[in-house]
Length: 223
Image (cartoon, rainbow, N blue to C red):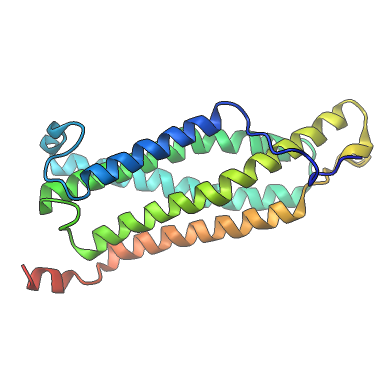
């Protein structure tokens, strides 16, 4: 019978296009505003009071980081269960969490942070090291997440969906055993676990930069 490795990689409609559009939009926003004193596309963004920008930034960080860490832990537990109902349900729902919670929260965090840096320091490029480094870390996280998470979650989701469907039609030889366990692709699961742990490492590095503020004393000494 066809194995998980033999299944063709087919990206589910909608999700990939939405993530791609988000990546393009965020990349344009960062490049346009990194060295600019006037915020693009709306200069009026600079009129937002700093306390409101701080609130938006903190809310975005909280939702974004909490979602990444929580889904990492839950996915580890779910994939260990081998349950033919829980696993397909999880990999379907976690993609919705990413599209409707993680991406908007990351957008809110980056945009509000760049607006505040521009208002406070003139441009993002002229801001202190810890602020620029935090943006660089989040941007690198976005690339890592897109390369490792998005490419594997679709393959795992499709294979588990196929196994679940075979179970519902009574074909236990195509991915499920008689006890309702699913034959999930262990290699993809391990790749995703490593990817998720590294993603959490990016979050820790970003929070460490913003909390410890390396180089801040030198920045003010030189200004």
